[in-house]
Length: 149
Image (cartoon, rainbow, N blue to C red; front, side, top):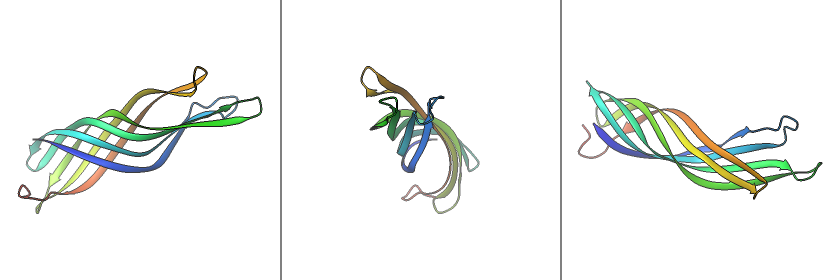
């Protein structure tokens, strides 16, 4: 069995702070993701009503990156950039069909966006930031139309 699916998720501005300066923890890089989405291809095998499947495709997300650094010995400044990025994802799952077009699905996804250079001060300050999101989700699915058993 095979098919296509897509989704869009609001992630609530999850923030990760990394790359802290060991001498001054106020100097750091931060990455936030407020939404992500997927276009997934799915291929699977039906085992008496249990569908085991592999998924993969494109991952989309909106990132908000920032760098807080020193602009003088006593003064800090925060640079901010916001952009949407395209990456890839893959994963696997299981789905169990019930009557009236309903099924229960559980799947795991690994999303990856390769390193992107964020130039804070061209030629002086920059960060190369890659991102990954690991997701496990469970969902109740309702199919509509003539194909629903």
